[in-house]
Each structure stands twice: as C-alpha cells, then as structure tokens.
Image 1 (cartoon, helix red, strand yellow):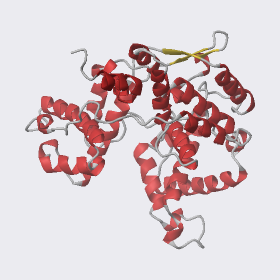
Image 2: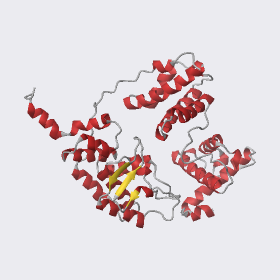
Image 3: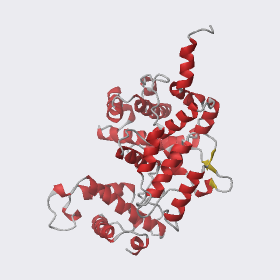
Image 4: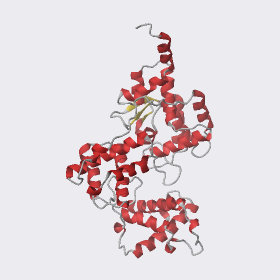
Length: 403
C-alpha cells in the first residue's frame, strides 16, 4: 500500500487493487506455493482465469453473486493489479524475474517447445529487428495456441485445413494482414521442416493474395483540418499539453507514432534546434529540425505537465500511475480519439500523409522527401506520386507532345 501511495495511485484505485491481492493470496495458498518465484507466467494466466470465471473465492464479498457483475473490464483491472504487484516485488528483490511484464517476453509459455526454439532462432541467427521479432512472435504464439485448441499433439498432424482456418480467423479478407501471417508462418514451417517435425514443407503451400503496387492512394488531411485538430486540443486540461505536442510533432515533422513513442530526452538538441529520432524501420537515425512552435510546445509539456522526477527517459509519458512511457499503440489511440472527436475518420498516420503532400506542393524533390520520411527504399515513397497533383497535371497537359 505504501508503494501505491508513493507512486501517486488514488485512494479509489488502491481499494480494488488490495481486493485483488487478497484474492491472489487465496489463490497462492490453494496451490501450496512457497515463494513468489513459484508464481510463473502460466500461473499468472491461471489466476486471471480464476478471477474471471466467477469462482466464489474470487468474489470480494458474498453480496456480489450475479455473474453479470463481472465483465471484460474486471479482466483488465485484475491484469493491472497483478502487473503492479509483480513489478513491486521485482523492484524490491522479492521476485527475480517478473512473471507478468508490461511488454510480453519473446519467449513465453508455449504448448509446443519448438515454438520457443524458433523464436530464439529468429533472434540469435536471423537477426530480426525488435519490432519484426515482436510481430512474428504475435502470430506464432497465436498459431501455437490455435493448434493446442484444435487439438493437435504433434506438428506432423498439421493439415492445410488447420492453416486456412487460422488465417481466416486472424485476418478474414484483409490482404495486408494475410501477407503478414503468411510471412510469419513460412519461417516457422521452414524451420520445423528442416528439423524433421513436419512431413512436408507447408511453407510452399502458403500462397498470399497479390497486393498490387500503388493500388492504394494516401488520404492526407488538408491544412484546415490539421489546424482544426490543433485548435481543438485544450492545453489547460489534463494531458492537453502532451497531446498538443504529439500532434504538432506528427504534423510538422511527419513522423510515425512509433517514432514519437521511442523519442527520449537525449534525442532533443535544444542548442541546435534538432531532434534525432532513433531508427524504427530504417537502419539510420533520422535528424529533423525543430520549429519554434514545436520547441515551445515541447518545453511547455516538459516543464508544466510531464511527471517529474521520473526514472523514464522517454519524452512522452502516461497520465496515470506509474506514469510509464507511451507505447506506439497508445500514441496511435490518443491521436485517433482526438481526430474522431472533431469528426475526422482515420488514424494519426494521415498527418504523415499531410506532411508529405504539403512538401510535394512546395516542389520538393522525391529524393529529399524520402530522407525526411525516413524511408530506406524509394518504393515506399513512390506512393506519393499519386497525390502530387502539380506533376500529374503536367503529364495530362503534355498530351504526348514530347513523344
């Protein structure tokens, strides 16, 4: 309780967490666990199921008997309570390894041991980037759980119907997502086939739907829409200074949500008015100039709203205890939420498209645009040729006169 109070948790938040921990005590006693070290990742999952399954021992009082009183939000709350407790135990030395970290480990509890071996192979031998490894782990973990639920007991029992059903459940008709799943499964199947765990190479049977180059046109926001977004943010409200700085950075620099989330205090060079974004998709750092309005917005947030002192070096932090760094998904969610509030559909990535669109209108070269967007390949920038209306008009006016 002292830990919760010292980290700024409100009294109304501490109460439910203590109730969850009393339930955890009964759960641990029922399984005769001697130390917290015996509480592994699988038991963390079992405890959540224990609470959500409406066991009588999991109820805070005998008065709450209706199962309808327990919904999805209780599942989320119990996760928060468990994470907070294990984080405290880990920080005080009572627990050597956190059984429920904020970021799931690449190698967790899998039903097939080869699944963890393959992910270890990807990390140590294939040299996948952190984000690529996390994406591969997502689909491989789900496939492992899917096969266990079928149920299959060995890899050589795998058939094409299992693969098709899994892909349909995970992606439906989304071509891009189907390609991501196929890419993750191909690597897994090749690895298993080389070990002799599969009786055939199922990787060759995965035929992804064709996705034509430049098939989609970026939908940038207009300048008026961007200005309306910025004006709609009340900087006097809680979180307003942070949200304004996030939006202004995305609009004026065209950076991704993942780059905003990864930005640290050391990346800001106030003397030179330059911000250097660490590599997310490319291999090189991305230095970009800081405009005066952006400098003022960042300074206002850092001075007047960012939690201080903080052990985290990330620029943008959460608004609730323990005030951890914003994840890329959190940045995307807050941007999408504010956009929907003023009637704009889509994600914050439209600000990146707006940034590119305005630069093209000013006559910037595509090679320069590629550098500013941090694209390692020109094919990624090539899609913006479809919104360069000035050049497209020149093509139409020319009418093949130069042929």
